[in-house]
Amino acid sequence: MLDRGGFPPKPRFRVDARRASSDFGRARAGSFFQVRQRLYTFTMARPILLAVDDDVSVLEAVVQDLRREYGSTYRVMRAASGQAALDMLAQLKTRDEPVALIISDQRMPGMSGVEMLERARPIYPEARRMLLTAYADTEAAIRAINSARIHYYLNKPWDPPEEKLYPVVTDLLEDWQAGYRPPFEGLRVVGHRWSLNDHRVRDFLSRNHVPYRWLDIAAGPEALKLLEDHKLDPGRLPVVIFADGTALVDPELEVLAGQVGLRVQAAQDFYDLVVVGAGPAGLAAAVYGASEGLRTVVIEPEAPGGQAGSSSRIENYLGFPSGVTGADLGRRAHAQASRFGAEFVTQRATGMRIDGQYRFVCLGDGREVSSHCVVLSPGVQYRKLDIPGAERLTGRGIYYGAALVEALACKGEEVYMVGGANSAGQAALHFARFATKVTMLVRGDGLSVTMSKYLIDEISRTSNIVVEARTQVLEAVGDDHLTALRLRGPSGETEVQASSLFVFIGAAPVTTWLPPCILRDDKGFLLAGPDMRKDGKTPEVWQEKREPFLLESSVPGVFVAGDVRSGSVKRVASAVGEGSIAVQFVHQYLAGF
Image 1 (cartoon, helix red, strand yellow):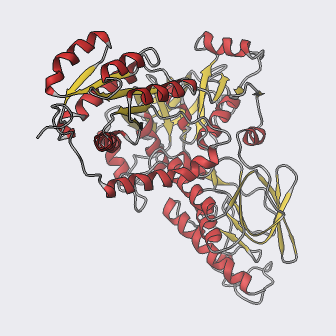
Image 2: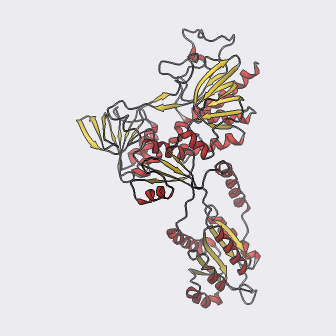
């Protein structure tokens, strides 16, 4: 059977509706977080694949095949004639949008595919050009390789696409990508690798999922030229340069937060529920509080995810068989809570005062937010190394926690880590992808007592991770940055060259800002529910006739969840559980008014 001047019928394909709907669902799922970012992030437009054909049914088939395979990373567009395609390319060019591939049928009325591709070449000279032909037009297609500089011609039909279309297109796109240099129009950070403030800025932006490009002042002339172009002093770093040309010099994180579009002031003075801390427990409380109709605000000084947000891979959390990064888990939970109406404020809680039935949380900018109920989940912070040189070199080679923002900077270097718990194991596996060697320094006899078996097994299978047991750090050596470590191990004292040390030596609760009426144990962790009892009696500060709820602190209406609670299980799942359970007690407390 032939049609249209001796051409074989163009193949028609059934659109996979289930596949299309699931792709649309994934796009919808990610869109909410993109909306939050729209005021302050640079989102590079996906490169375009342009299909051109005058036969609508065949054009639809080409588009669907391309979308099925490449729709997640490319935008697939269509044009029903050669002239329409040229007009579209001209418009895309004025918007400076990238075009990766133009695939055109040869026989079209008014303008052939060869002519269209030839005229498209000056508009997008780097785009790959592909011609669809019938067998009878093979000779013309071969000639077009010279005249229109087409990169490939494909005889019709191309069914099945997995064998005939996709290998060709994939090869062309890989070739295009190899030479493509997308312009970057987002935030740029100019700083020095061995600067504490530079590290803080980059870590803040990364954990809040704000795309940026980092330029090390010592790595080459590009950073100096950028500062010169913006008339900025290279002696005052770090500098954050925005897409509109404005800049912040050595900014406070709260100021930077406001500039990149994060909310830094609460929208109102009174809420049904104030959550302090946006770790797993706080995020769970926000999701359940907001979804159940409570006006909820979350106070978080850094980024959603808390300490867990810096985990490179959490592999034992229910529902993620392939694991999930802490940053991604925090991002998902933040989007979920926001969708239910929870408000997030980038501020540090600096105090709390109690006035009758009202609980006031004081913020770093001097303002207050009030409510009847508060969930305290400020989390913990890693304990500091108490050795000579540690304080001076913090942020200059010594980092607390995973500090994933430093991973690429450690490429080709040897990295040292102190600690033997899960967080250290996850970080070691992550950094092993970049560093030539990762050395774990462990005080005990090994990892079996403090680390989950799945991590121990994975570490043993990773050839460039070495565990040094019964070893501790005595001194950090270096002037402007870390250059060496003095260690004590089974064979005595040694000194090793080192430029990066990541520390995981236990955690201290973030509770010094709270008033004395909120009881805590001898290590500063908050007491709640039955744990407040001494000798079987309720503490004297408790004035209510009823017993305290399970997660209620010594102040009625103030609840405790997550790692900051005395006796808590330091796991993401348990923190999420406590955050959700705390909201149920909030409802019970409010019902008593």
